[in-house]
Length: 386
Image 1: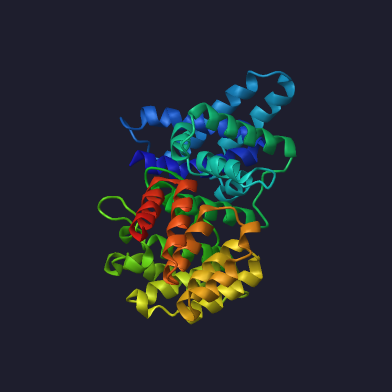
Image 2: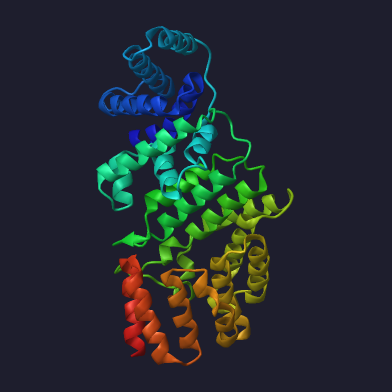
């Protein structure tokens, strides 16, 4: 499809153009204009070299912008340099540099994700606004402010030395697609697919980048069984594991195995290892819970994250019982403000036989979430206990 082709080419062209002119904001605007031209012209006649066509069109759009601004002499010199580069050899693929710029540490996570979807994934502002359930003008302002902040930072456009911020943003993007924080659907397949596509651009020889890709593949493999025919959430212990995507599991496991032999183990590799243990279990009862508890312990020491502690408690409940798990999460309320804490506590209390308090907490969690499938699931659990 033309949309898929443009989506894959957009960050490559933006990278080349931003590197040539040194102005990420202006380059991004020029690429968006070129994408619009491609949408209008390519359905009737696809060029023989789509990447070259897009780069040439974006370069000309940028030259037009430069020539129309003040300080003509300085900008004409830049336009001449761009014109020379356009007539030269093949351009380098700077997609990673685009990703790094979108994940600039001065931006908020929300702005990082929005700009990544716009510049690296090639989505329109309207599509991004729809994904996050905000008006298009609001999203346009968010993206514009992000680009202005990057420009004001003075950070040069170059290949990134450290990909930690890139991995973090892709991780957040995937999580938002796999468990949408708001709206009528549990999954946003477009977001998870885009996160996986962008994760594949990272260097597979870097252990944590490979770990992140493995994690995405192993978790996404469960998606076909995670929602019922009616659109309701199905918890993992109740899922039909024969519906899990074995192709993704095989690829994710292979990527993870290769990452483990390359060096120090990081948080994404550990999370992927936990996902792999779930994938290897033919049934929920065959899950290697002691090994999962041990991996969560390592992950907890690395990250210090209360979310990891919460997930570890669920695993501990399977090995040492719900009371031990409840003791683990007693102090989390001061560090974790999310409906998931109420939902997990309700689950543990239900297993411990305290159904009245479990029902109350299920209802409280349902009232706090903005995801309609999660809300229905939690409300149903509360009603069943009552």
